[in-house]
Amino acid sequence: QETDPPTITIVQPTATQYLHSGTLTLNYSAADTGCGVGSVTATMDGAATLRDGHSLATGQTINLLTELTVGDHTFTVTAVDNVGGTNMASVTFTIIVTADSIKSDVTQFLAAGAIKNKGEANSLLAKLDSAAAARARGQCSTAANLYQAFINELLAQSGKGVDATAAAIMIADAQYLITHCP
Image (cartoon, rainbow, N blue to C red):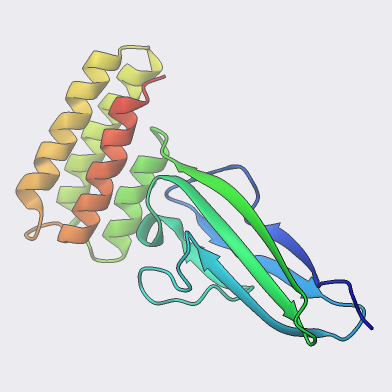
């Protein structure tokens, strides 16, 4: 009679902070020394797939910018062995934005065609450079005004020069920086 449930190893994600502009490659496994693993399922914040329908299979690369929001997320793996023994493991991680990572948002969305032209991207990047400089000097209210100008430009360009979904993501990232100044 086998009594030990499967063991679960989650290598990635780890309980840390990830930049919103980054990627994450899921890496997990389940093993059972007795009767073998019957099934393994993974969820992100309780959902079996990402926003775009991607699975949560081990080896899956997640573009954090387009797939997950800023804030805390819980990744859970559940394994069931061939006689019904069940085990579960979870990792909670946080997605953050930095003054540099939001610039990467712009370059990624330009490369993906979500920002229609380089002139628009340069205009947005100029505002972000100024805001980052103010933030680095500890001038949070100046930085907030510059991030607000960035947001206002995105609101004006949303659905025109900038894809509406991309604009919403960058607006949320700028709002994060306004709220979390140094």
